[in-house]
Image (spheres, rainbow over the protein chains, first blue to last red):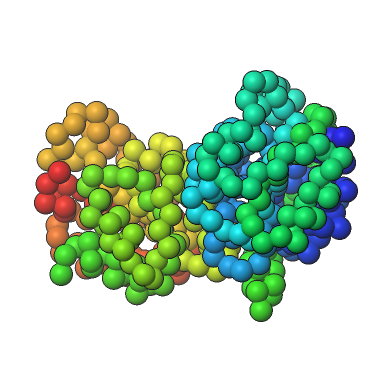
Length: 187
Length: 165
C-alpha cells in the first residue's frame, strides 16, 4: 500500500476530525480525497505539521490528528522530545513512513535504512508509540481515536505517488475556515 | 517593577497565554517569569522554527502565542516566517535578545547582529529596538499592534537595555 491508498482508507475516520497535514503530496492527496474545513493543509514549511498539531492540541479540547511523513519528522526531529514532554492526550501523530521523500522524487530517507522512528520516538520519551503495517492503519487509528492517550502511529508502507493537482486555495482561506471549524467543534 | 515583571505583565494583559522559548542568558530572567506565570503555558522548544510551528498551532486553537529567542534565530526561521506565519497571516510577537550589540563580549555574536535589522527589514517585519530602560513602556502597544495586524513583529532587546551581559 502507498500513502494515497492509506489516506483513502482512513477517509471515514478523518472526515470530521481536526487534521493538520504535511506539506506537498500528503496535503494534495488529502485535499483531493476529502477536502474538509477541518483540514489544515500546509502549503510550505517542511517538518512543522507535528509542531502545529501539538500546539493546537494543547490549546483546545478536540482531538487533533497530525499527518506527517518520515522525511518531515527527520527534518524536525526535535519535535519528538517536545511532544513527549508536553502531554496532550487529544493528540495523535500519524507518521506515514514510506522510507522516502515522496514529494521530491522518492529519494530514500534514513528512516528507510537503519533508523527506526518508532525507536526514536520511544527514546524521546513518547509513552504510546504504535508501529503498524499499512494494511492495519485503519484499525490502529480507530483505536487511537477511541482512546484518551497521546498516540504516535508509525505506519510502515511502500513508497509511491499518484498524480494530484496542487492546492490553489488561498492560505488565509484555509486558515480562516479551519479556525471557524475549531471553534464550532469546541462549542 | 523589574523589567521582567513588566514584560510578563504586558503579555498577560494582551491575553498571551502560550509562550515558547529557546534559552538565552540575556533573557533568562524573563523565561523564568514565563515559567512561573499561572496565566501562561510555557513550552520550551528545541529550535526556533519548531517553536513557530507550535505558536501557529496555538493560534489556530484560539490562543495568543509569543516566541522568545535570540537574534541568531532569524537565520534559522526565515523560511518558517515567510511560508507559515506570513503566508497564512498569523500574529506572532517575537521577543528577541539582540546579541552582538554594545557590551557584547563574544565576537561571533556580532556577525549575526550586523545582519539582524537588514534581514527583518527585507522580510517586511515591523521591528522595534529596546535600548533604554524606558523603551519597555511601548511593549503593551506593540503587542496590541501585533494582534491588530496579524503579522510577526520583532522586539529587539540589547545588552544596554538589560544593563549588561
